[in-house]
Length: 237
Ligand SMILES: Nc1ncnc2c1ncn2[C@@H]1O[C@H](COP(=O)(O)OP(=O)(O)OP(=O)(O)O)[C@@H](O)[C@H]1O
Image (cartoon, rainbow, N blue to C red):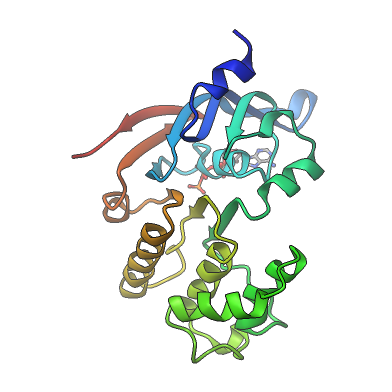
């Protein structure tokens, strides 16, 4: 059976990965980071990715979100054959389908909150980008901070802007890499509630990397990575 046939059998799957491998570096300095990952994620599932430091969680997220190309294996994301694409095609396929929230917010310091959310929408050709950005910022409780620059916002507010930016194109998949890692416990907990509430409204698949068991317990499924492989995969009651 060919890879395309087997991928198409999971028509409601958001992610279908088979024997994914990632090797970085060349020759003697090559390091195998992902060592054969098989993972199927249904559309709309919330999944926590746990595992020790250096086990490959961020690398797996980079491959699944199309930021990095796998060295081998098959990968279908939101119905697109990511493994067969070059980097330009991957960038196009990601646009509008995939939202990413990172630990270090990555807002552009010279743009206001509104511009940080609106600019990617404008670049994608949306005519009502500023209106959509305003709505998304209102949905994360920041309609009174539209013209503030990142440096004028608290860490929790900056992460709210980053969540608004990730969700504004209405992606079918959202990836979050330690989204509360730079926040104090109380702010982090508010951000998690917000992220899950916004995901609930959108029905997007959510894959979240965390060291926080409490955060993981918000998810329907918990996958543990160890040494570049899936070590456990559970659906807690
Ligand atoms: N560009 C690179 N070249 C070589 N090795 C790399 C590269 N990037 C990451 N690695 C290695 O790959 C392994 C997995 O890294 P990764 O960041 O995916 O782990 P992680 O589980 O997300 O860790 P953490 O929880 O500390 O963020 C690590 O051993 C890391 O040193």
